[in-house]
Structures are given as structure tokens and as C-alpha cells.
Length: 367
Image 1: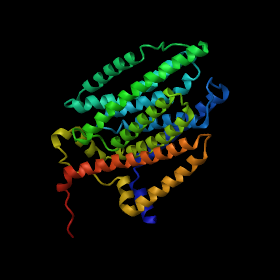
Image 2: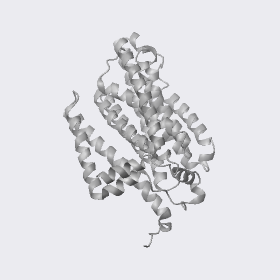
Image 3: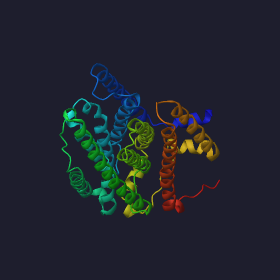
Image 4: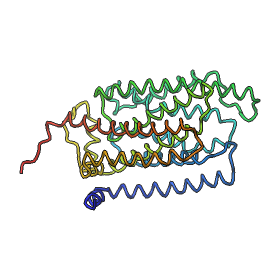
């Protein structure tokens, strides 16, 4: 165990520690401001602990993704889009004080979900996509058209506090039904993106497939929640517990990616992604990362046992906290299990793809 700790500590990048300290300082400042805002100026919507956690998580995810940009060589636009999405989400508490933009805020929240799937759709079918702005321009045009047509029957600037009971529920029902259709469209694009990625038409930078997997889970969760609402099942707070699990997954993977891209050795991998079509994988991937050190030292059996133990430990508080039904608790645990599964699959699949391309170039050292 001591050897493992020493090996892991030796593999921790000093730049990562420096950036991580910056993230913590900015996160603390955000927490102080958010707490002061809710304490001295209570919004018109009651804030529960799980909501507070999610608002805080959005800002942490934004910081973790934004700081990786300065190190990122490949897929910079995707990182920008993720950072932009969670930057908006981190300012959601402000919208809780302005009733006349509440509907607009909901529409924008779902619109930001389209950024990465739509961009990757055009990225996967556009030659030399990394070197042009064409996929981004097409993404913005398609999002504007899709959102405009989807919500054309809603007055987005309605002040919900001035609507009578009938008008309020009619507006809310239209909003959620249209959002349900919009997120279904988003999932359709994501399925195409995953299909083309699995076919090897393009390659994403390290840990981005895992981040995209969690993003896919976020989309599926939104469909599940909106489907429930359209069938008169109100479980908004229960859904926030699902989102909390997803946000934890985002935070973990973004920190792993920050550690990866802040390592100078990652430049080789990043340049490979940039020139994937030309090189076709004939470049060896660096293998001195923190993630590699942990996997090698633990071994397969210890890793599986440790993962199961960690999964059980995380599930225990999920069974006890919150005033939610057993059905919702069970679904949270299932979603957590699925979250871990898709994260591992995305990471392992990327490693396997690398080996398929460069395996014949890797030779064992003969003593």
C-alpha cells in the first residue's frame, strides 16, 4: 500500500496541484456568495440541500473544464462548449429571483444540452473538422432553428407570478412537453455520434469519451423526468438526486482529464488526435499517467473488489438521505451503477482502440 501511495504521489503533476488549488479557492468564493444570496435574499422557490449541491456542482464542473482549455490542443471547441454549458448552469440561482424570465431560463437550460451532441454530429461527418469552424457554425444554426420551432407556441417572457392557476399549468405543460421532444431529438443525435465513434470515424481526446458517456446519461435522465411529468408524475426533487449522482461523475472525470492534459507528455496524444485521419494511429501513446499507475499497482482483482466496495459505500447514504420514495432510491442506485459502468466502458474502449492501432508497434523489452 505504501508503495502504491508513493507511486501515485510521484505521478501527480505539480501543475495539476496548482490548478486544483485555484479551483478550490474559486469554488469557496462561489459558495460564500451563493450561501449569502440564499440566506439574506430567499428566492421565490424553496431551496433544498440537493438543489444547493447541484448549483455548487455546476460551478465546480465549469471551473474544472475551463482550466483544461489552456492545456488542450485537440477538441478545444468541445471543451469550450462544455464549459459554456456549465457556466450558464452555475448562474441558475439568479433566475430564481426574476419570475418573468423563468420560462426563458428553462428553454435555455435544455438548449445548452444540444451544444455538444449537435457539434459532434457535424464534427463526425465533416472532413478536417478540427481545423475549420464549419461544424460550430452549422451547430449554432441548427440549434436556433430547432429551439425556435420547438417552443414557437410559448410566450417565453411570461411572468409566471402573474398568471392565474389555469394559465400557469397550461404554460408549464406546454413547456415540459416541448422540452421532452427537444431532449428526444438530442438523444437521437447522440446515438448517431456514438455509432460513428464506435465505427472509428474520428477519435476524441483522452477522457472525453467518458465525459460524453456521462452527458448521455444526463440526457437519458432528463427524458425520464420529463416523461414522468407529462404523465402527471411530479418528482422534480427526486430527479435532482439523480442529477447529483451525474454531477459527481462529471467532477471526477474532469479532474482526471485536468491531470492528464496538464502533463507535458499529453501533447503527443493531443497531436495524434489532431492528425488522426493522416496518422491512423501510428504513434505510441504515453503510459505514465496517474490512472495507469493506479491500475497497474492495484491489479485486476483488487480493482474490481475496490470498485464494488466503493459502490456499496456510496449507495448507503443514498438509501438513507432525502424524503423520497423507495422506487426513486432504487432508481438512483441503478443510475449510479450505470454511471460507473459507462465511465469504465468509455475509458476501456478508448484504451482498446489505441491498442488496436498501435499494438503491433509495442514490443516487450527483452532482458
